[in-house]
Amino acid sequence: MPYPLIKAVRAHVVRGGGGDYHDQGADHWIDDHIATPMSRYPEYRQSRQSFGINVLGTLVVEIEAADGTVGFSVTTGGDPAAYIVEHHLSRFLEGRDPGEIEKIWDQMYFSTQFYGRRGLVVNAISGVDLALWDLIGKLRGEPVFAMLGGQVRDEIEFYATGPRPDLAKAMGFIGGKMPLRHGPAEGEAGLRANIAALADMRQRCGDDFWLMLDCWMALDLNYAVRLAHAAHEHGLKWLEEALSPDDYWGYRDLKLSAPPGMLITTGEHEATRWGFRMLLEMECCDIIQPDVGWCGGLTELIKISALADARGVMTIPHGSSVYSYHFVSTRHNSPFAEFLMMAPKGDVVTPMFSPLLIGEPVPVNGRLKLGDAPGFGVELNRDGLHRPHAR
Image 1 (cartoon, one colour):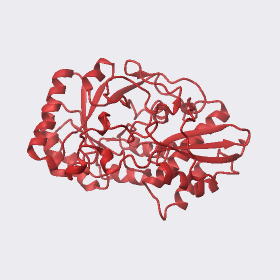
Image 2 (spheres, one colour; image 1 turned 180 degrees about the vertical axis):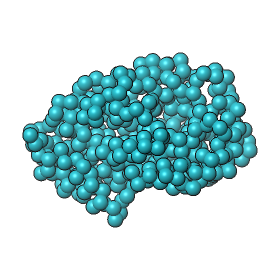
Image 3 (tube, helix red, strand yellow; image 1 turned 90 degrees about the vertical axis):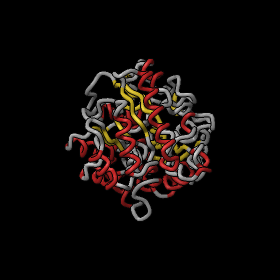
Image 4 (cartoon, helix red, strand yellow; image 1 turned 45 degrees about the vertical axis):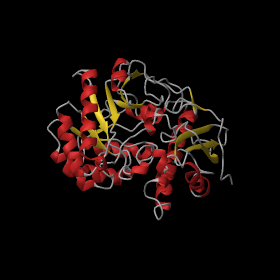
């Protein structure tokens, strides 16, 4: 039986957190002195907001079926992505059967290829795709994980990304990933400070707890190799996103140069099956980390994960709360998940998309069992939604 046809597509923007990992206050750990590609400039070193990481805001996509059922999603992209959804992508949705999800994705991607291919446009496509999955789940009365083939494990295990892995250990997480504080422009003193912070955290956490470093595209190959070897002494499990996402050749060389047993991970800022094909065929990393809200949505993540699985590479999505959890629970090559500690000091577990998602689940003792509510299992808090490009 065909689904009710799509009646309307709406794109909203939200400012001030609530879905955008980047739009946090100046007192938040995620906007503190963290190594970035802009750290080479002293005036942009202390805060990521100083160079404009928060300018776009959050994108909320709603897709309404003719019977009044509404699916929605939350990702980044803000005002420009909302324009793309309303004025370009909507033509491939309205009046169509939402079950034609593969055809819709294909038409959205190839119709925007002349100005898209990744980045902002693929963020917009991802938002539409996730809203479609949510809508179909609600129309079927099924959770998304059931539509993906069912869960392969009863609960999801998490590592925590934040400033205090020692606290994450006490909360029951299986590991802690810290932001790298100092980049190459801060010289030998910065490198020593990075290693000292890691050594201190290892002492606090003991030898049986995973520790990782998130470098957020900030390093060059030489610095990354030196950091990897210095960190190896302190049992670093993996080095994440050390180089520019376009430097496939550098990642290949970094993986070849890494100490035995240390994993090289990347992919948070990569997009589509073609970008991940480059990472995988060039043997750039041990784990890929697509963000389902940025890589092309769930429809594309399925393809990306299959490519990785065929090569024995784990797929551990970046953040994304329920949009990742439903997928991770259904894949053997996604044995654990990431939880972003969104509390300002990273000292308590709070919902990642608060306050936008109503009923958003959070790990307890580092673990989570998904409920059987339809779609992604959450509802939308409409406070603060603004529809700037309504047709």
